[in-house]
Length: 351
Image 1 (spheres, rainbow, N blue to C red):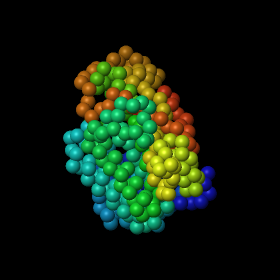
Image 2 (image 1 turned 90 degrees about the vertical axis):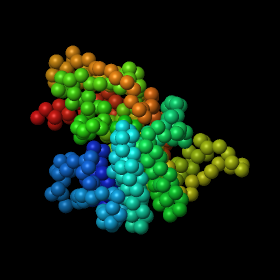
Image 3 (image 1 turned 60 degrees about the vertical axis):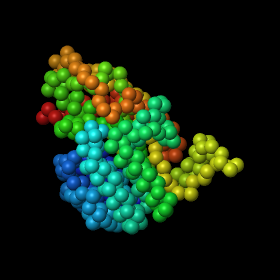
Image 4 (image 1 turned 135 degrees about the vertical axis):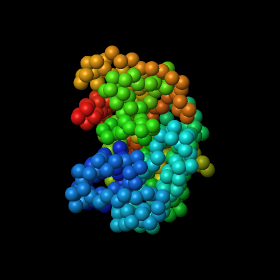
C-alpha cells in the first residue's frame, strides 16, 4: 500500500465502476472527490461514505466547465469514468452521447491541465476496435468504429494523446472489455447483459439472446478493473517511461534506422481477463449459479432474436502490454466473477 495520501477525483463515481473505485481508494487511505450528475449513477452506491471526512460528493455535469474546475481543485490525480455508455443508446441518441463523452471529456481534460494534475487516467473502451476482425485484440491495431459510442471513445484517446504531447500531461487510457460485477444496474432500457439476465432469471423470466448465442465477449470482473486503475494511477513515471521504451523497441518498426522512443507518457491498455465466453455459455453460467438460490431457475431456457446493430461478433483481449508496463495481472476469470456476482445480486435484489 502506498503511504502517501493523495486527493483523487473520480468522475462518474456514483456509477457501477466509479463507486467501486471510490470504495477502493478510500480503503487505501486516500481522499476522494466524487463528481456525478446521477443520470446513470445512484446516490445509494456512495451514501455509505457521506460521513467519511475523506470523501466529498459533488452533484454536477461534466459538460459544465465550472463544475469540473470545482471538482478538480487541489486534486493530484483524476480517474475519469463518467460517460454515457451503451452502443444502442448512442445509436438512438448520438447527439447526447457525443455531448457527454466528448465535450464532457474535453472539459475534464482542460481542467486537469490547468490544475497541474499528476496523471489523468480515463476509461477507454474495447468498442474502439470497431470492425477489426483480428483476435486477440492488440492496442496498436484498430478498425473503423461501428457506433456513435465507439466514435466518442476513440476521440477521447486522440484528445488524451494530443494533450500529453502538447502540454506534457500524463494520460493513460484503459480499454475496458465488458466489465461486470456488483452494483451494475439491471434497470433501464440500456442495462448491460449480465445484470439484465440475472434480474430476468431471478424473476423466472426467459432472457433474450441477440443472435444465435455464438457471439463472444471477454467478460471482465470489476476487481480486475480496480486493480488496473490502481496500477495506472500509482505506478511511478520513470518505471512507465522505461517500460514503454522497452516495449517500443520490441513491438514497433524501425524508422530512419531506429525505434521510436517515449518522450511523453500517453498510451492505452487493454483491461480484460484475456478469455472469451459466448453469450450462450454466459447464459448457462448465470442459470447454474442462480439455481443455487432458486432451483426453479435451472429449467429456464432463453429466447433468441435478431443480432443487434453495432455489435461485433467476437471480442478477446491481449493484455500483455498492460502486464509488461503497468504490471496488471488479472486474478478473476469470468466464471469466478459470475459466481461472486450472482451471490451479490441474490443478496441485494431479493431482499
